[in-house]
Image 1: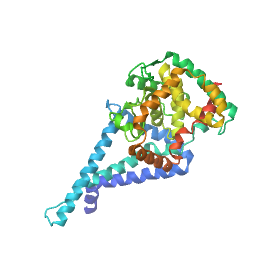
Image 2: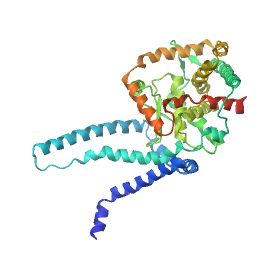
Image 3: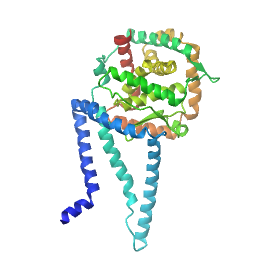
Image 4: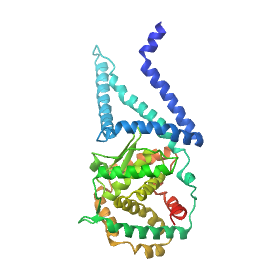
Length: 369
């Protein structure tokens, strides 16, 4: 009977401990078995991602943003409470009790770990998009420049339907919320074509603290513990539009950054909205043109000179916009943290974002050309 009472008294801790052990086991097995990771990501983790996304979608704001701010407030409260507790011990004050609030940040981190293991961790070891789409690992120089030529042609055609402000920046033809809904619809359509992608998602949300967040050079973030795709709307429209598709790619179970970039690009091409399509082309052109420049400068210049002046002005306007946020300690810290996180999940750090060129070229050769 006493044992039963003890179990009942600590039932919450027992349940959390068992659940954490189970989630950790899922994480470990997912790192050693690609088949398990693919199966779990597609059939089980997707259910939880959808469930958390459905709950958070009821809030018109980024629930994750509020929770993150609340977490840091709880950390501050915990530190203060613990200092007061130590102060009472030092000065022999009676009737002191250990402040339970000190444990709150720890418990939050445990729950966050469990949700990561359950919803997103296996996505890092599943079969890659290259494997699912049967894309090659290498590209020929001629294929790279064929793809670059296609980009220039498509961008020049797409820019005819885009308006620009006096600073030279393009402007979306609707609100962020409307654009996010269109991107989610386009991704729904795209995911119907591929059975390895989560078929249903939820539109991205704007980040309220977008201006200060820009100093970290982060244009968006997917929060697995709420299932939300969060976007920095302080960035120029073409970047926040593409970032919306990028973060929604994570929501569909794509973990690697280069693959999220690639799926975001395909989503932009899938959309009937001309600005969304334009954003995908202009954003990804940076990667393909950088690769072409490093490969053959003369051929690169010969093709890039034909780029519409309005698009060249777009890049210049972005450069002017970004000068304010370039070198600062927040960017260095955020980059180091992100780099460490990506490497801990088997990626090559922040350089992973640019490793999309091979996929772009081979997709163009196999599916578009």
